[in-house]
Image 1: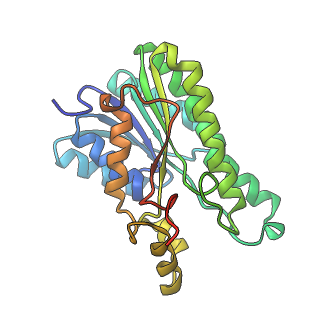
Image 2 (image 1 turned 60 degrees about the horizontal axis):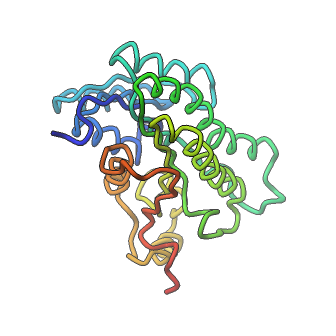
Length: 254
């Protein structure tokens, strides 16, 4: 039996990068996938790819900062596939990077809302649907930045992503007795459009690669495998964790 047979999963940030790879992997492992992102054409291409491979997926474009969108995604999961078992709240942004005094309040608030408030909004509607199924797995994409490593010029990003770990711990404690596991996944540098935006020169790329004990960036499919672990029964006794899949950034000093 596949790891997610008979499960229904929402994946946000599914139009590219980690979300795209995870949506495809979840579908290959038997899940019915509700794919979410801002760009409808990319979502349509993802659904077509999953369908052609024999899987099941639907897509709904929208902005994760919008509470109505969070509600609509859950309603789509229930209406199309009968319920919700897994939610991978993965959508995010690096936000405005640079000297902290130069970051505008508007950019700060946009980063917090995109990375942290959107996770709260997702959970607000996903948790009741999981309770109706007597359990589930809720996953947030956080990062090592602001958790084990400080990087200059990334205050809003670090604060928002660190906040996800606190949210994870609170929800894991609150809903563990009801059969819902809640975990944060902390990738290292990953070869995605967002990751390439940070490592956008040969020197910057060399710096990023050197941060990792493995001296390379992850492929999105590698991070998707860690998301699959947290989504599946393989992690049945794992909750409240900040799971590092960071290629050794957090321990590397060479």
